[in-house]
Amino acid sequence: MRMELLTDGVYQLGAGMVNSYIIDGDEGVTLVDTLVRGREGAIAQNLKEIGRSLADVRAILLTHSHMDHTGSASAVKAASKARVFASEADTPAIQGVEKPPNPPTYWYWRPMFWPAVFFAAPPVEVDHFVTEDAKEVLPGDLRAVDTPGHTPGHTSYLLDRAGGVLFVGDAAVATKDGRVKRVAFNRSTPEVDGSLRHLAELEFEIAAFCHSKPIRTQASGAFRRFAESLTSPRRPTRT
Image (cartoon, rainbow, N blue to C red):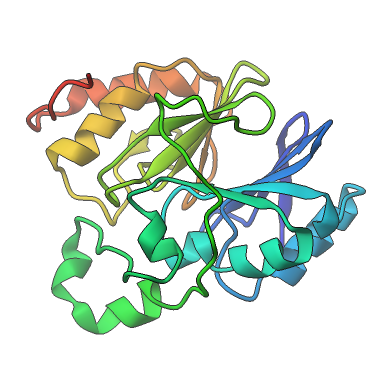
């Protein structure tokens, strides 16, 4: 599996189609998402390349409940005893109590694809709920950003390093020329576009996506330009 350095101690696993991320810190390793099931060996190999192992993984941050993000979480947790962080809304699906929700997309009308795409991840126990306003302790200089829409509890994460690194999850993707757009699975809804507007309020230099290559410079500006183009109704104001 291809591994690419984004900035000091932050690595992308994958080549753009399905990505997860390694954050190397003084207190150990944090993973943001875990690819599809069966990729724990590839994750371990990439950790070895930076002088780490699965035993060094202290935290697994899940952006949401779909199998291309949670697929190897159970195996990595079993090998590392890492704590798993996710939103309360997505936790029943992550833990296998409920089926993962269908994204707001044309795939909703093609149910023959749902089992292959969304239902195949082994369940994993979530240790800590994350919300933007809660005081839970995330590892390192990370904080949660509420970005519902793709799933009810979709969460992005912002790392205070190198001018800010935003782990976007499936709230958006980047085009080849560095513009932001909705991920193919997301149609325009007040929730989806409200989350994009919210991300545009933040400051960060790098945006790391799960289904595209990153934006490496002035990424928050790219989000603001896209947010200015949105015409969907605004979701209710955060309180």
